[in-house]
Length: 304
Image (cartoon, rainbow, N blue to C red; front, side):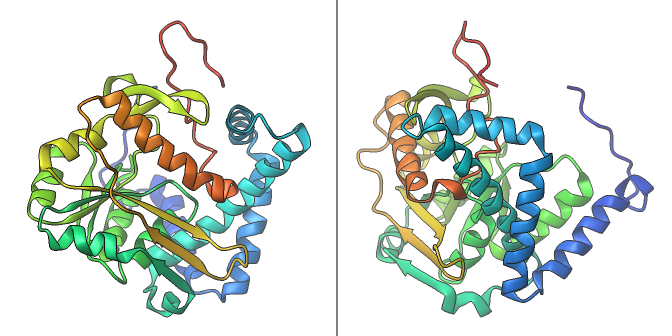
């Protein structure tokens, strides 16, 4: 697919919908919590009903990853996934558009000693985040305790990219383009913690094939390569919205060990096993709308 050419002037009419969306995010960030939940659920249900392509992707992912569920249970999980991700839009707006200090009382932090110890050793740390619907809010709440950087994928729309990067740099110390490996290595070697989410499909060129929910998934090699080049420990991080939809739990886990092993498939398998464990706790909160199994081994047909 050809890359879209965006106008150089941010005042161009083609950007007006983007500016409108940003304005709505600012407004939504200041809604009362109960309104955010209701609006998020409503947006999720609308997407579940009308976003047929995304629903097909979600249905396929859940069918592949949860074969133990019957058809009714799978359909219910699909619906709950859209609702959770609808709420996630409002959580992201909150994280990007206002201080989350007022949410400190909604948080339960556990295992912080693992990251404290890693950072105290001066080798930096690679923090494994996961693409839950709560991802950006989790990063913002994480920032209440730790000043770390984040590796992210740039947005093609320059207006939204500037808004997103500015918002994330308010939450994190620095927002690092995932293609800028040199800067990421430099920051980690200086003793910084770096938040990194290795659970999406970025294609065969940067991945190995490793098991994920019993499926063969293209799994990015960057996690083990960062660890090898920096000597930094890799610390898994679990983050989820609790069943009351009012509070959140952020759980730091001990570093992966042994890691890296020198075997990129074994390393990717170890990372995927943690991600799967975290997802199984609250599967509806994961971003199943993403084509996680887009890249197939040679000779295999698309699952979508």
